[in-house]
Length: 144
Length: 90
Image 1 (cartoon, helix red, strand yellow):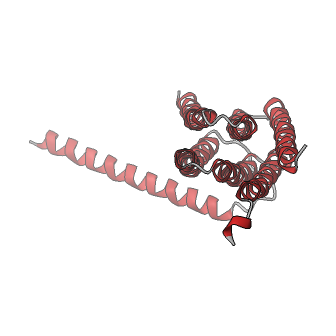
Image 2 (cartoon, one colour):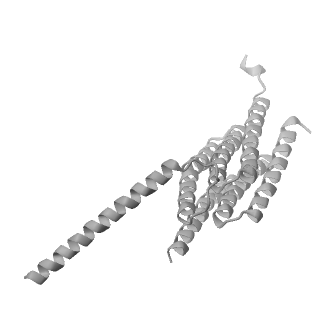
Image 3 (cartoon, rainbow over the protein chains, first blue to last red):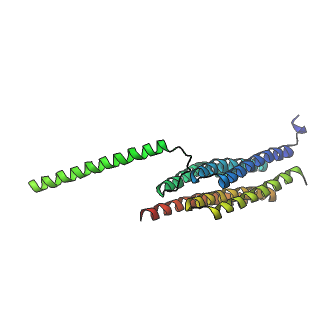
């Protein structure tokens, strides 16, 4: 039964399907990068789409070559890109928020503004606390 | 031309179109973080092109290039973000 199957053709077919799916995801990510209105939305589109597309393309390569060392290298690249893409996106997004890159006008920012107000309040409170402590220390020093 | 090579050629063409679209965003992009994001996507596209080229030529040495490129792409975007943070503070 197993002798009748053409394994080379089977591998080529599976590889074709995976590569086409991956390229489709890459194309969707690129169109998202070009068409979305806002930096943060673009960031989300390219992080998800490009990572999935790259993973599918590399998996297609690993299936086609059918060697353990190639598969190991492919899993290395996939694992590395799956770990680093969200980290890089998070760092760039945080930097963009700090640099005050404008949001899209339809973005619902209520929760974010509440968070910022809370953080600002906590900062002011802790600053007041430090100032009071410093004043107390000063008066103690002056008293002795 | 077998369907396999037809698929690989199609994938190469589509990825090249993707590269052009990303280059448009790289040129247009109103702010510097936009360009950093576009650079990230260019690196991902080039890794895909290298992977498909590996399958074209049947030469498995090119996979190493993809490993190194994924490492350097991460390093590049992180260092750009760090630089942006620094110039914001000073």
